[in-house]
Length: 285
Ligand code: PDD
Image (cartoon, rainbow, N blue to C red; front, side):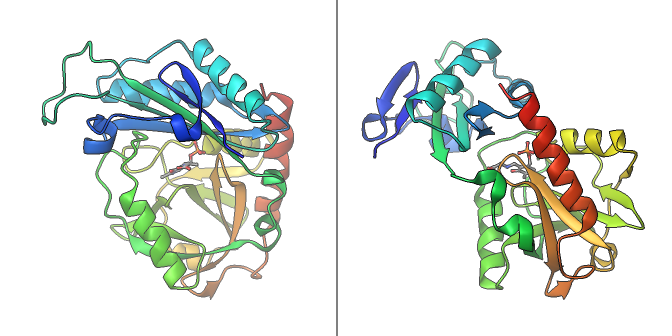
C-alpha cells in the first residue's frame, strides 16, 4: 500500500511526491535530517530531535523552515494517515533548489522539507535485542563535522556493507586508535561496572538516545565516563552496546570476530534498554 508522504506543504501518495533535480540536497548533500521513533502511535523524544534539527541547520547557516510545533503537527498527521503504530519518521530539510553553484543560493530560496514514515511492527521488541549484534571496526573516514546531522551518509553506508561482507551486522568507526561511533548509532563499552562512551565534540553525532540513556544511567546510580576508548579496551570489556532512535539500546556481543564478555547481551545494556523504553514511552507525544 502506498504511503502518504509530506513534501513542501503537501500530503501526497509516495508515487506523486517529487523533488527538483536541482535540489541542493541531491546535488551537494546540502541538507540535514532527523529520525524519530514512534511507539504505540506516539513520538519518542520529539523535542530532542527538533532541538538538534535547529542546531544542525544553524551550523550550516539555515533557519528552521517552520516552528517546532508545526513540525510536530506534520509528524503527527503523517503517523495518523499511515496508521503508524511502531516505526520511524524521517525528516529532511535542504537548502532548496537552485542552479548548480558551489556558492549558496540567495537566502530567500525556499527550503525543501520532506517527511515520510517507515512502519516497523514490533520495533521495541526486535529479536536482535535478545541475541545482540556483531560489529567490525573500520577506519573513520567521514568529514570533520559529524555533530551536524547531514545527509552525507555514503561512508556510513560503505561501513555497513563492509560489516555485512565480514559476516557482521554493523561497523564501529575508529580514528587515531579510538572508537568514534557506529555507522548510525553511538557506541559504548562497560568495564568494571562503568559505562564508557565517547565524549561530545565534532567527532560524533550528539545522539538524542545517548543523552537520555546517560541521564537514566546516572539516575540509576550507574557510573558513566564520557571519554574516548580504544578498540583494545572494547575487546576486553565486560559488555558493549549501541544506542540510536531506531535501535534504542542494542547489545553488541562480538567485535572483529572476538566475543565480548560472555557473548550474550550484558546486564547493564539489558537494564538500560528496559529503563529507556519504559521512561521514554511515559513521555512520548
Ligand atoms: N542515526 N551516530 C550516528 C552517526 C547516527 O547516524 C545516529 C542516528 C546516532 C544516534 O543518534 P540518535 O540517538 O539521535 O538517533 C549516532 C539515525 C537513527 C539514522 O541515520 O537512521
